[in-house]
Image 1 (tube, helix red, strand yellow):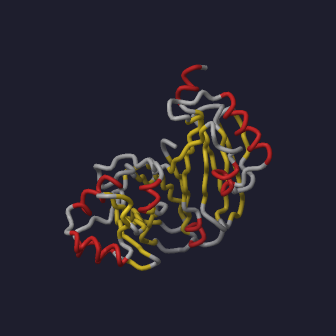
Image 2: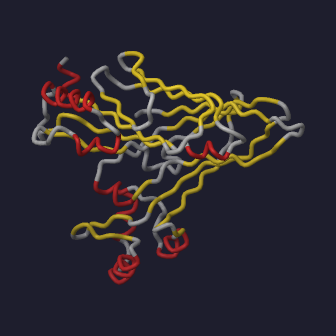
Image 3: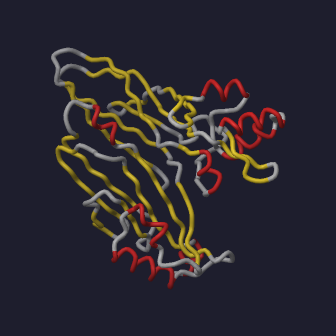
Length: 278
């Protein structure tokens, strides 16, 4: 939940050097979801708010960042700019910009579905923000190139409280089986709720894998390593094969891997009061 590190080894099998555009997309940020659930954005005040960095064979790479807005599959970036709105769906940024619009302009944008009024003097972005980092990369003939990217993810959130059911609703999209549901029930019983009744925090992390299908052939060697903060944490995903190899470490390995879907992880963590008391 704190940092994602991605290490690629690319091989140019051709007899000629190749200079290509490399793009690294981040998962979509949905404006409404950012408003209604506590999505943790690392640093709202910076353009590169995920602190994305890249290296090639150990040397820093200068990257560029592009952010665009989409609504129902249509690029609405020019409409946002024309209205004086940022592409960013981060709540503090967009709410201030919407409040600066005239009531007439707000009504117009509401009708188009670009903004949604949540409450009196409260609005949220109706579009999806798509961000990618990109750069030109040199791939020498018959050679390997090692690219490493690191960034701080935007982590989706939510929580369980003492009044909730067995937890099947929040975890149904992460293929939680009987054993996982039993662990969740046990964690709820042992966790000490805070003043709001919260016992377990939800930490949802997405990662785009399907772009690997654009390469020449499958991913020959794929390894996923997940590190949780505590042995009490519960790690869930629909990607089969992720095994616990230590108190806070989970691993999955594949060969000749064609990703059929992107990666979605859910890490359930007892609240900090629980951690502090043990």
